[in-house]
Length: 321
Image 1: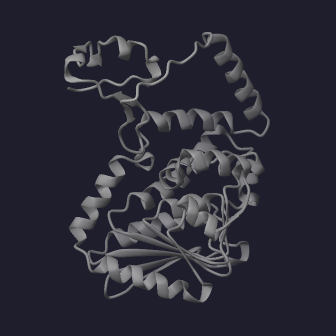
Image 2 (image 1 turned 90 degrees about the horizontal axis):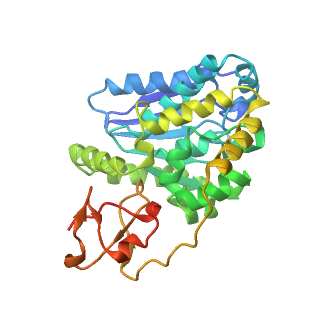
């Protein structure tokens, strides 16, 4: 068993290499690895010369998700204990996601469960041609709530709805096709390819990199913090999932309540030809590009035109002239 589950070193050029170091269990994470990753980020955060972080996995595989033996020791504990564990995991992934410096992940072999969320939280991901991926949580009766925001940022809702629901495995080329990785290279060239990206990052201005990343994060699901409404909803779900038998009952009860409250559906009107989607990753509404005379604001900017009124409420968005 590795003495230190997370290793790191910092070069004179400001390039930190962080290595997940539990090769005997394919770098599956437990409390020790989570705390080791948090401690590594704390230590590196105090290094004024830090420019780039390269994330690697020791051994044949990058990261195999959660250590199921550890999960099974946590599951019977109280909801509060389960929340504390999940909160620490959330913090580790989120801090990696929000680092003000560029992050590069080098992936070989298996990358499963939480590992897919970890690489989705990195700015650049290079995979070896032997890499295999799977969002496996549903196969073990778990939910991938902690990493869903990062995955949605990386591959979009449509792909998450397939791969997080099926739990199926897919290869490096498919991962590149859906946007989970940026480049696929032979295993022997993985380190060299990573070094090329690092060189490109080091050639850029640190302040400009930090500002660019911060602006991108403002429009991301992964920018969610513990004070946000979405986190509160996730926390409520976590309590329901604290035991093995409650989740399905809670889900079906929720479905029944929703069905009772739901009004009969009406046929949705066709959207006008001049309707278009707006906003970034975190926005899913529609704005009607109407001629200025029809943009008479009412209330909080809702367009007061017959054409707009025919659109269902969930497709409306306050529009500006």
